Length: 208
Image (cartoon, rainbow, N blue to C red):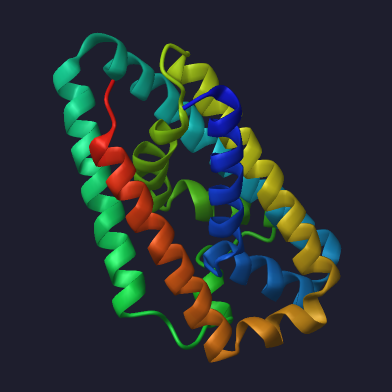
């Protein structure tokens, strides 16, 4: 896969994944609706910082492993493929019908600093680390630095996420209603599930 192909494929995948409703979307929408766009944007910046923290942890650990160990590379590849396969099957067989915006789901700490809330909500979610480890390596072209490319891919993910957060903040009055529709939630889950399955096969067939 060429550099251009990697960037285009990753950007498409990251965009679809970002648009799929999750905890971050719930936090942005709930904050924008209840406390205003400014605090919601602070939360979005905190979420972005959490992505960079996970990216740094994954980049340096991933780079070291891939550089010195064929076995580590193989284990990472198969574990990542199995994880993506499992996640894709779950989304296809059991897509959600509802997306909750309850306050208890998105507020897990007592701080009034929404930047800190967004960051901690991301950093304390181990699924983010597992997702980055299993997903990002597929888009690192052969012969390129895993560390540098990991940060680049995380930056693209953050940019897409920030644009999506700004869109949600701007359309907070309408977005929550759309994302509560069962057909929309089920469709996005199934689309993401198909994407995960495709990438699981691609990762399993990849070579160093």
